[in-house]
Length: 206
Image 1: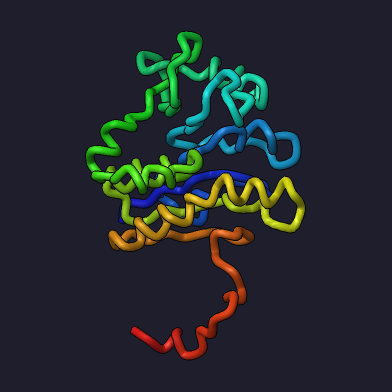
Image 2 (image 1 turned 135 degrees about the vertical axis):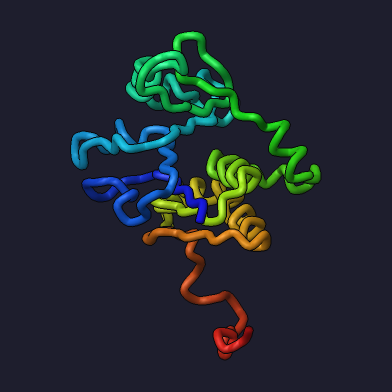
């Protein structure tokens, strides 16, 4: 089975590859730098992803302002003509980042034939990653450390809204027969209790 792990927030030492040996490990944004002091780094990644703008845009401060240490790490990664090269997928290229590969958004849209009304549900990087891995024929997508911010604070609620498109792409993937595993804790698992309806007996339906 062709599997991929999306590495997000880390809460322990070690790599999730130990649980899913053979899966492609796709690191995201600052999963290494942010948690390095507490948990060390994950070094067996196969690709890295940061599909955010480098400089400020409306609603987002940019990679350089939000995580400068990660940006500097990107600048140290070897290019395709150097030993140890691994692709760093970006929304835009930076001449100082040798490992950078431009995300093929047009290819994804054309391959999936995404209608305009569905494109609005590309709400965050994980959505784009899921779409690309669907196109690449992956059969199992594992969300490891994603959807971990959930609660009643204004900041957490805003974060949930900003990333709600993940649920849409999880559904689209599953409709295509792709297995999607969400590692808890994560609000992408779904609510424990539905609102205003009863699901009694649904588990017995096939």
